[in-house]
Image 1 (cartoon, rainbow, N blue to C red):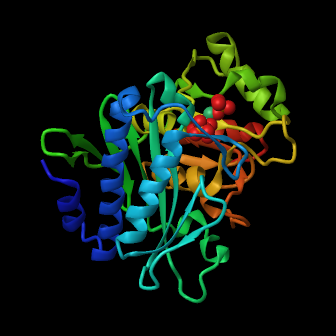
Image 2 (image 1 turned 180 degrees about the vertical axis):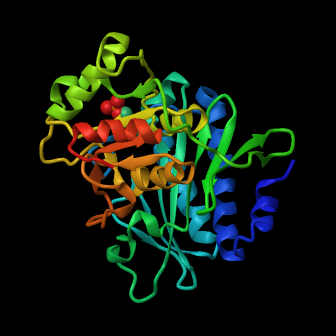
Length: 323
Ligand code: AFP
């Protein structure tokens, strides 16, 4: 089976981008090792601080963030990074050609119950000039690569460099990711959806109506029964959608009306949208295609509706969008 670095070479990925992707794979293997140690490594539990988003950091959020930062900024190809766990971007060497955004450990509330978590990453070109937050504010469609490392029963690296989506599995015998799925394709239709139902009373009317119709199953307007899943780690939910289709949404809700949504555009929505679109799916807010959004801040939040193309379109119709 082909190793990750060999498959990047065969795909004609530039040396600088391959170097950045290999750095992410190395960091992922290190994070994986620490997660597998669990309680033995003394890395579970809270770090006792809050991040810039006001969320309590887990020890492993901090460890994963520091590992990624150190490895990426030391690899020579990265001009700067922005992380969900950092207040602002962090600069690397002037020679670096890429900007890397990441969520070091998505779904970190799952750590303490030994459930799925992941590292999400998104790579943009550094377009020159003076480095500032503005350098990061590029549309999702300008990503040169995006993906995630999923720490589940097996550890997987899922990647798009704009030429479909490939899945790699960590082979513990050789300590390398090997290519296990050459081209991911999401079915247009589905009978599965993912949403945190406990927020139902806070959603806007169109989402209320859409989910109500799904729940009526074969007796309702959709004429078929739907099943529901919720991993509480977007990385796990998106992985399921890439593997067997489905609709995933974290909609706007009125718990904090000033916030546009819960999920972060730069660290979660954009990279996942590139993967979903590259696998034939759709990814939208309740108004626009996510990859077309002009970001205004690195920690910006957005509502997300993504997955099987026909089902996303069904949901968007309730929001007055006929795609
Ligand atoms: P954490 O990484 O802070 O645990 O948040 C994960 C996440 O941003 C996303 O991965 C999940 O889909 C979503 O939050 C789960 O949110 P709820 O806890 O509100 O269901």
